[in-house]
Length: 302
Image (cartoon, rainbow, N blue to C red; front, side, top):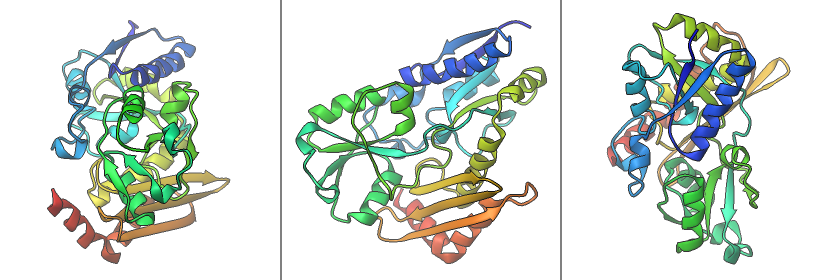
């Protein structure tokens, strides 16, 4: 068949991820072509994402390209992908998850400060809420852009540190000091590269099944079902992480108020079976434990 056209955002990280998908396909003897597309989220770097009023701000332009048959597949950071995709589009493959964690990056002048003393630059409601849960007096600044842009803003701005995805740092092979944040639960499906396709392109979707990592798929679908049941979209303060240990799965998740004062958490170990929707089950337990009122409070804020 002809080359598989791989759509991607045109940032350095997104292009790396597209090339990684291409590498997997080429290893299976398929020809590929990378097609960069500028997304709405990359065009507006001044407003925090939650204020833009757009679901899937980083995926919408690639969705349109897929539906218009300008590309055959689209490569995404899965945490940017809404849980409900447009009609006729679906996630058809997941690469193996590498680094799900968030990490703290300090500027040199703040190396001596304790966590509770840091003024943080982050526009993520989740990162802010989990930080405020532990350090309620913390101050924040908004920050947007790719990794390089954020690091430049960190050096130039009036704040001490920022929080980034470890996956991005590792994929870009950035030699930079970072610290783990033990209390920070990742965004659902963080650290996973996903491939979206058109449901009617059966031949290409069948090809993509050959590069799918099933264990990663089980975990991230659970996390996304949890998110979808809470109706959190991509920006609410929701963390969820599933991990396989031998024949068991550990699922750790939390929904927090915007100020971090009220967090409803769940931490479960269980034996997986494909008949049960565990993500939905755990989310319903959170909703029944005060989560319904908390979600309403968060939505009212916007």
